Image (cartoon, rainbow, N blue to C red; front, side, top):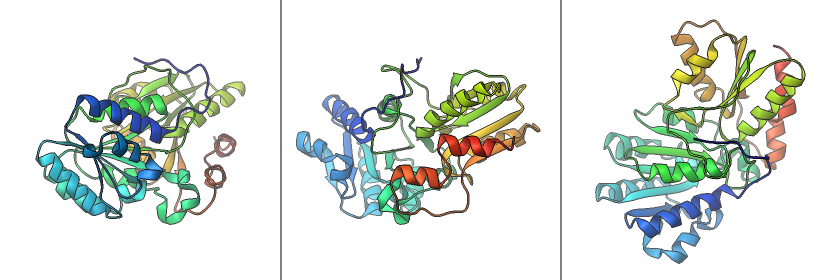
Length: 316
């Protein structure tokens, strides 16, 4: 289903990937409509407005209303895709997603951009360390964290085929390539990227690249390390986890999110539910708010770079 990229160079901007996917689908499906909360320039969804103005609605800085409009469009047979920054696509509109979306059995496809440290200079008000945790609490919601442009393209196109509430988080800018062009995936199935005998790393989103780097560094120290890209955080691939837990000395989760309620919590639940006494180290953000800085500075500040992760793992 997939092969890995030949290199981990920075690929196409994910916002461009999303727009290109939507424009392609609009050409073949008149039911697709896109909505943005006055961020068309930042998201490049204005390119959709120029090419297919009847398929784009700018609701203004009114995110809750955007979800309501999208739910209404779903009721009348349309397939809505909505975008805004991660905290405004989840935390600010949680009640609307819950009631107008999930409870009413409507379809909402949500792209929450610039999660975690990628919020950059937009600062703490625009930083979301909790979007996955919030949406995991809603029944039947699908939650994805895109590792690269190939995966993001596939996710957007797959969402258009499904009914229900679907959320994908991802940087607006370019991230390191993980997968070769043409790779395909399956919602609810993790991807085993690297086999190993000692440690198991479970990562998601753009930190999959760091997970592979960490595994390579550990290998040089004589520690055989396995890596899973758990790009679908809900529904979680419990079958794959239980298979790969066998024989491992430790499990490590890496996420651009709070360790509360995110990928690390989901993996911890699987370990606990199965009564497995395998040490778990959750690498993410602990009891902190976002702050202003470049994404590279913030990634370092919150301990999510390869060297910082390796330093943390010395305790193992």
